[in-house]
Length: 116
Length: 121
View (cartoon, rainbow over the protein chains, first blue to last red):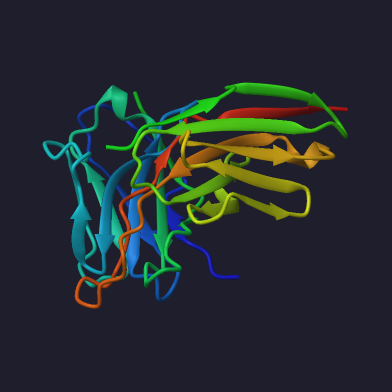
């Protein structure tokens, strides 16, 4: 069964350091999302890509966060510099987004970030 | 933007009993309402969804109801089993009409804060 791949699963870093997360969506899925999930809360959208284009990054803290999906396939989310409040699970999801059947998101297992 | 409220935050039921989780949404344009189950250390997984042209949908022991007028939807789990223990999230989204030039797509899902469902043996 096709899955959304994410790495690393766990990352511990000190504040002010740079961190990067990688996501490989299900093959053929044009839409890719990065969500942040703080412990005990629901996921919150950070950025949405349609192929290689950013559709929505209104909730992305652009002073320290960046995301790219250069070839419209895999994606990288970067934080520089990391702050204590960035500790969370970073979830990647993808969907077909091709007409009226769009909507179902397939999530990866997430990258858990701890900032010390 | 959309705002989704979910209740309760924790729900404990006896094995075999039913569980109900309720959500409300604010954006009348939302037309797709999925429910996700998240087990410890894993990403959310879709368990059932409903679109705004349907009032109820059922899949074995789980069902979802939607009241568009009141802007609320609920998840019902009957004959609960230990493996139903998890965190459940409701979500809402406005799916854009398919556009051949933009390739269709949807705004990002807005999630509720989650319900920790505990099944007592």
